Length: 403
Image (tube, rainbow, N blue to C red):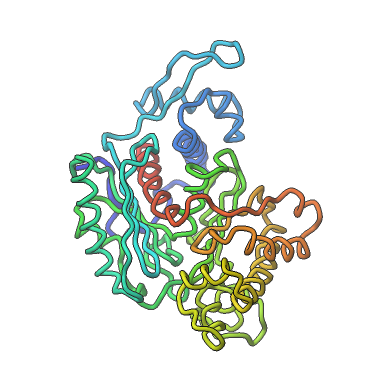
């Protein structure tokens, strides 16, 4: 059906036998992957553009492009750049003509279909009941995906694969959700196996914040940004990191877990087992718990509406949460110094109402140089980022597997 191959049986990712992570072969593959990721993100580029965007030397880029062209991975077309003759390098994606992305939220799921040039073919959002069974969500996702493919006339044979985002970290060694970072309903659920059984196509998986960061560099306003933090504030709080133009996943995939940084000693109990974590003190769930004792506000939608209407209690919890969030992302920025921090999730629509307390607290906890060099903004992708990033992940995996 597709020449994008699924992961091996145990789905563990180790260097091939006899190949150390620091070998020349491994270095060439990593450099080639950087070129592939850049072409996937920005489209056709000259070799000079690739050198500038990847930080690799022009000689290294030339060797990689020559190798990829010989192996049918890129096409080369004469062009001009700054008045000089040049060659445009265009990535040739595999035979699939569309990728699907599925983003699972606390009470909804979104499905998108995306073409290799990142044009969105179709999308649909579905509201689900609170604390739904993930397997029910998988069944609904299949129904929605089938409906979108019928609407667009796309056959299953043309589907390269399905990318999936869930709200919690993924252990990249076995592609299972990490206990303590996901809702209880998702614990021990083998998302890849469950969905591949239902859909019959390869499935790739990552957490929602990581995918949101990828989407921001493709569909957001910061496509040229090499160091970006996507901060999702929802029922949980997590960050997706783009460092030096590449998604950062660390050794196991558990990165950006800012929601489990302690901000209040002996504070509220957190699902991770600790107390006073940012998520337990400043997530939407925490805000609603505080408001529930003094107001009838019980949902995210009611919270947003109350803030926009000037409700003093709602504004107070937003201010308090923003102060804690700003402190933690300030600590993060002091370590990695991003160019931009993008606020995502359902509260991004509040704009400056939430950004201002975050920014004030951020400024108090970083050096002036970091403060002045870091922009804090709201996402323009609404709740679409995770699903879009998931679809982009399919194309990325398809290209990298031929390396």
